[in-house]
Length: 119
Image (cartoon, rainbow, N blue to C red; front, side):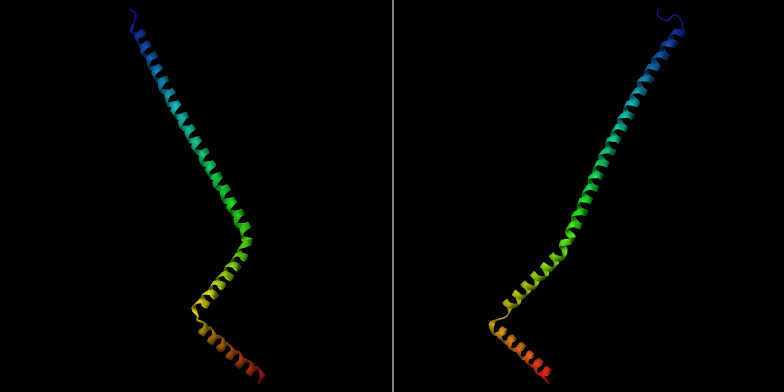
């Protein structure tokens, strides 16, 4: 027989238990290391995305600063365009007779102002 005493059986059982505890510890260590690796990859990916967002913000900031010098000219152009189209709209609304009447009315006003200045 393999086991001559109960002490031999005890040593075999203890060795078998140590083997299973070692396998269990290795399995736990493997999963802990893989979890740490995944966390590291996630943090790295998040950092890269935040860096890209920072670069985008810097790019937008420079574009806005460079474009700010053109805002005044653009506003002036829009004002002139709106005045031009408003004048065209007024011309379309009036008939030739109304336009002559308006001119006569403006001429009368200017004559009155000239008469008042002469006095």
